[in-house]
Image (cartoon, rainbow, N blue to C red):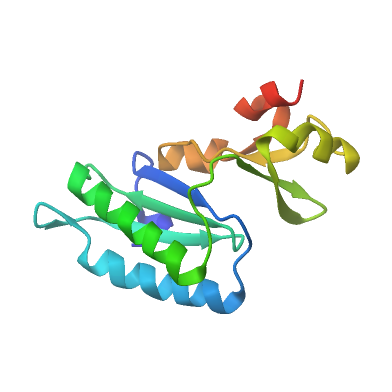
Length: 159
C-alpha cells in the first residue's frame, strides 16, 4: 500500500542508513521492498503495509494493525528483510547513534555524541530540523518525525 492510504494509527518503524543510497540503490531497494510486502503476513494473514525510502537515507515501514497486528514472527521477518538489505547494499540500518538533520536543503547525518560540535561548526542552532526515528504511528510520523532540535529528544545532547 501507499503511505497515504494507511490510517493514522498505522504502526511505524524507521531505519536510517549510515550513508545515502544512490538512485539505483533506491530503485533496487524499492523493488526488494515490493517483493517483501507481497509475501509479508502474520500467521497466514497478509499485512496491509507500505515501505518507502525517503531522502535516500530512511527505510520506513508502516503497517495497519487494525487489519492484522504484526506479530513477533512478522516483525522478525521485517527485521530479517532489513538485514538482507544491509548485506545487499553494504550499509547499516541499525546504528541508532546516527542523527539526521536538515542543512541548506539537504539531509545530513552526525554521530549523536558529536552532534553539538558538528552542528555548531556549521552554524546551526536549536531551531535546526532533526529527524525523530522513534515515532511509532503514522500520525506521529506525519506531525513529529521532523521537528526543531529544541523540541526533540535529541536536545538533551545539545546542552
